[in-house]
Length: 399
View 1 (cartoon, rainbow, N blue to C red):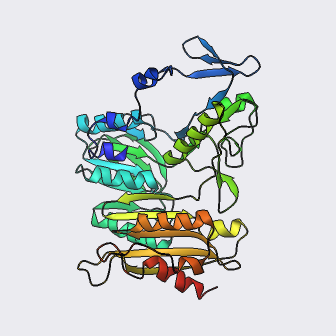
View 2 (view 1 turned 90 degrees about the horizontal axis):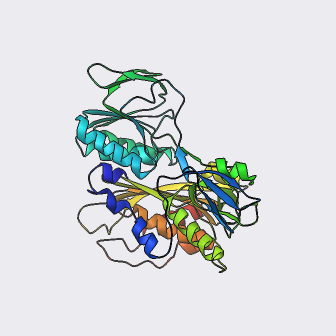
């Protein structure tokens, strides 16, 4: 959606995977602008906001998640937005197009905050990102956050860390004035991107088990604790194959896979969703930023004895012109030598290498195998000794 707001994607229809008409062509009745107000599990009935009720034999909850909005004065003012669904993106883009926005404040320096900073800057809007934490993209190592901060600065995005939002009010020279823990800031538009919360209201009414993450508890078949009720997507948990715990990782690709598994099982098939390793990425101007698995703190919390290292190398053969600097961090278990996680940042090849390491995590192979993995070699896209090989070999010396 940030790419739609930034006008890289011109039309919202390109973000719609399937229209109601296409659903109806396959025999699926779609009710738009209609919410489920309640569920009678004993009678097998869903009560709708239009006053009607639908009977069911099997129920799938795909209630998603909602943006977390802090309870502060002024969040309801015109020009203050969050970004979670397509309607939010359409409203933000229309507002920017119609209100001649000159300056924006983004509250939150996570995935959405970073992607939105690029979307706004490419549209010529002065942009400032604030966050309670001291550095952007806190999921990544401080050395990599420094590279991210340098890219923000190079693109004239102001980052203000350790800054909290206190209130928002109408401005004078600009449409809005934000009061923060570090003073006052003016903007025409404010976007709040400080996380999401799973929508579990219906799940609570049904008496479903809620996991430690706050999302709906499911099994590998996407079944909930109540017979005949499934849950998929951002509202439910997913099994993490490295930590061996059920966690909440609300990502679109995960939701797609869970939906397919639940649908197959409801239709009489047998399918499981084997879990995730936590692969994730975002693009920030010229940078690729990616991670998978666990960081050291998560590894310790999962009972491992982590050891890690960071290497800086070239994503292409050194004989080729135009160095593509790449930072790569590996985390491994000292006892077993198995890979536990990885992070990467660079102008080329960061995501591809994290994808390769995600496969290593999926299969559970150790560093001594990763150090000699067979990769496709061509000087313009990678050296004979890939940064993955070098990082694994160096980390093996610490075991």
